[in-house]
Amino acid sequence: MTQDDMEAERGRFVALAMDAIKRRGEEVNRAILARETRTPRAKIDALFPEETDLFDAIVAEWFAPLIAIIEEVIPADLPPNRKFYEFYARRFLHMRQRYLADPAVFELYCELGKDHFERVESYIDLADHYLSELIAQAQADGFLPGLKIDQALSLINQMMHCYTQPDVLIYLGDRLTLDKLARIIDTLFAGLSAKDGGASGVAGLRTA
Amino acid sequence: MTQDDMEAERGRFVALAMDAIKRRGEEVNRAILARETRTPRAKIDALFPEETDLFDAIVAEWFAPLIAIIEEVIPADLPPNRKFYEFYARRFLHMRQRYLADPAVFELYCELGKDHFERVESYIDLADHYLSELIAQAQADGFLPGLKIDQALSLINQMMHCYTQPDVLIYLGDRLTLDKLARIIDTLFAGLSAKDGGASGVAGLRTA
Figure 1: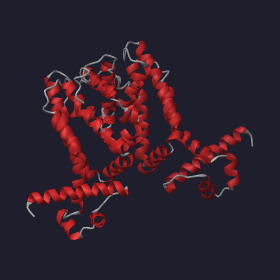
Figure 2 (figure 1 turned 45 degrees about the horizontal axis):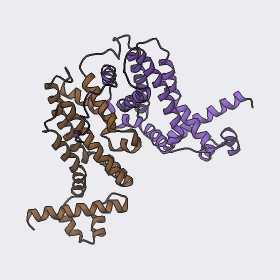
Figure 3 (figure 1 turned 90 degrees about the horizontal axis):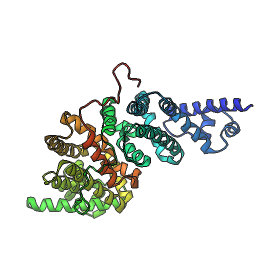
Figure 4 (figure 1 turned 30 degrees about the vertical axis):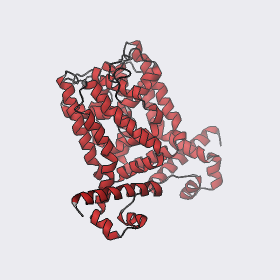
């Protein structure tokens, strides 16, 4: 097989593995994939030499549309607040669609992601990398003043948490809306800065 | 037994049930409680006539310190942003302490709360009720302008989600800090309003 043939074949078996996950409602490893597709185990092992290769390929497939959304938004010719909105809203809509299409399988993927967080982490890091770019662009236009990029990144991640965590989508459901998402982005563009607004009080008088 | 004796006895068995939960690492029902404490089942049933009575009493015990914190903060003589901070920071610290004291048992209670959400919901509603009061106080001072209380409530709940959800505390850990909590409250006092800041774009041009 050429490299391209291998890639195509790998893609075909990742799709078959994801079908099997959906059908069986549980994680699918190489042994199960061989059985389910009546494929010699040696062939599966040639495509996925390590157990983690199959899992990683499934994760990559799950994240591909989300990364595609991000890569479409980052270079777009939009003001920073609009870009932030698209960055979150498009992924939120995509995830909600997926959730509504099959809530049980969506929950299963959330569980798998939690159980194997180390296989998923690089995608979170990649999203952070792109968000840092958006923050730098916003700061160049005078928004989010005074904050280091890492500070802004962490604060924004926390404030937007509901709209990025797939499992929050499961339990908050209809309480998450595009209008609220927009209002939260408006809030951070209007209010997020390095300025101490006094919420935590004066050191020493702080009661908490 | 007098009513007071009954109450004291019920409290004692709730404490014993919580010890058993900790020891066994699983939900404890009336049958288990009777066995674990070598108490006649009839006595347990007299104290907790329904299975849910025991569970509800455990939930009440779990939430008691959190409600006490809220009831201490609400009437405090503090400016609204300081009050918001105390409202969240004290509960966050309390939950973190509990988590650090015994991560496994904390996770177990999170699971139990998720599995029996209908028994927990009234405490969430109560916190919402008090937060609505804080919002009204803040609006009387000119903050959060133009928003209906329910709108502000939902937006603030979403922006503060990381600092109120016990299970987020488990996986975000040290990334949650009092400084960030204060910065987020400063942000919403500086930026949250009914004003459309334009993040979602003009209707029709909205790309998401």
